[in-house]
Length: 435
Image (tube, rainbow, N blue to C red; front, side, top):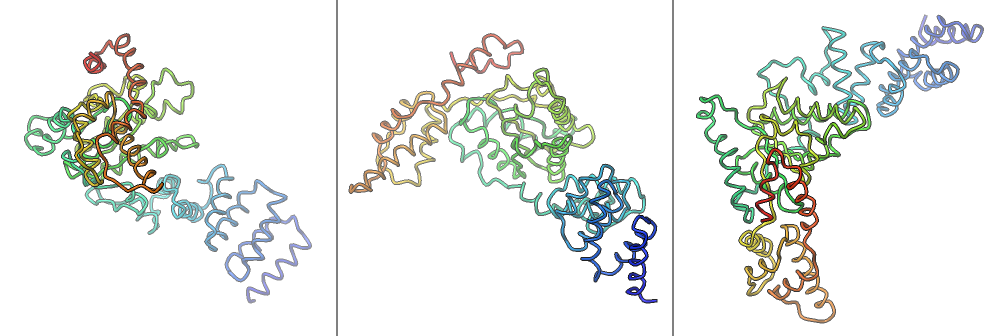
């Protein structure tokens, strides 16, 4: 009997006994085997699901049908309606994992894949194995997929490109760069290479720039992590995202893992009402400790404008144990920054020292702002019929009068913490700077 005749007979039998589950399963299984019945099978499955919305067997067959048609997003939607994916057949779970992987959700795909490997010791799939390599030997290096590779950069800036900040450069050189350049010497004394640095200070003073320059000095990979890269609406996914970035950095050592606005991820747990935020902090601390992995050769740099909001556990030895205050640039640094910013712009006889003295309490970002103000005014006059001219000292001095230093408000807040909440001496550098 050919399959066409057999399927027709099963349809006729099911028409007589529409509630016969045995006949229904026989028909569905038979139709699954032949792609020519895909449209009819889809219609039958959808019809049955309308009267039996919780039937996971029907949903499973629909997932496999849509996977065969490369309708990945529909497969995922149906899969998310099933409470226990591990109760589905292994090939269905595999198809769902592939859908997540191809749609860019590697975290969900990895979780299903790990579950499959735990359920079925001999489970193997070329696409998933290649993506996650759970079966790879300890010496085999994982290849980065395209999405992960985009996270990495090799900064081409070095300390010479950073205007001023000589004291900070010297401190980073002694605590970070020299150990990496003399790894064997440090290892002979049991000193680990890498660790954590916390850069704090008012906004716009070059914390991110100095972090990139540090990576450039040691020719290391650089990963810039923001709050949006970590936080996820689904419970547990934020912790997975955090682990993912640490794992990527460990695989490509030496690597600088930079967390901007780290206080948003590592806020004081005592201030939190929800456990989800506390779980992220606990995971962050565990990753920094390297409890389940080796952090040697991994440099973790955190930047914050509000160190007083950071959980004190981050400041313990072995975590952010090197804390560096990044103040607004001094006069010499302002001169250097202005020269760097203006070197490729038309200019004439600029008195950098005079401008630097007038730009009191200005951050690097503020200096950039006054250059923009000066340039805009010159362009505006040129568009009104004037003659384009180079930037001069007076243009910058006029721009300073139109711009208010962005650090003033920060120091007002910081001063209070330095005076009344400085038990550990964390804010001594702020007090020295204010005096």
